[in-house]
Structures are given as structure tokens and as C-alpha cells.
Image (cartoon, rainbow, N blue to C red):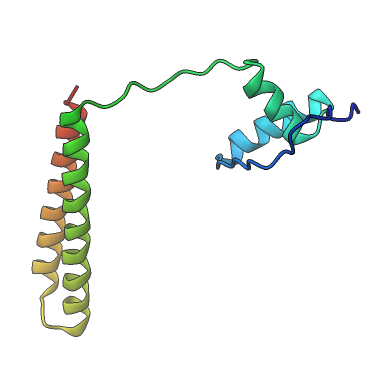
Length: 120
């Protein structure tokens, strides 16, 4: 195995990211096949452009604003669902009312996701 080349600068900038199990297995297989240490393999791929990077298009201002508002709405919906569940467990809200309200919250969530997918 080749040793990493010495650089004039120390390697001080860590980067990390998460992968799914299958993506991790695929990356580990590529690293193993390269006979390079993991860090050297990743530096080589990224810094020497041995990868194909597909950039996601930047969201429009309208979509970014909608995402912000929908995230706030989702947080409020989760709070409602939590209080509803607690009240149902305490017996202060009936099961049918709880189920109907949860179905309404799920419908609102589906509507918000659909609306967001139709922007841009």
C-alpha cells in the first residue's frame, strides 16, 4: 500500500457524512479495491475530480420560504399530535376523535408535501 504523500500543510480539516448501509458497503468495496487508506481514497476522488458530482439545483426563494413555513407547520402539527395522544391515553379524548384528528393531520401533511413538489 502506498503511503500518503507528505504535504507542506498539516491535514487539519475534518469532513464527515452519513451513508445508507448499502451505500456504505459500496464505498467500502471501492476503497478496498483501490488498496488505499480511506482518507487518501476520498481525498483522491474529491480533490482530483475522479468523481462525477451532480449538483442539485438551488431552490427558488419561493420554495425556500415555503419549506421554512412548512417546517414550522410540521412542528406545530407534531405538538398537536403529542397533546392529542396524551389526552387519549389519559381518557379525556375518545379514540374515534383521536383517529379522526390524526387522519386530518396526515391529510394536511400530504397536501403540504404535494404543494411543495409543485413549486419551481
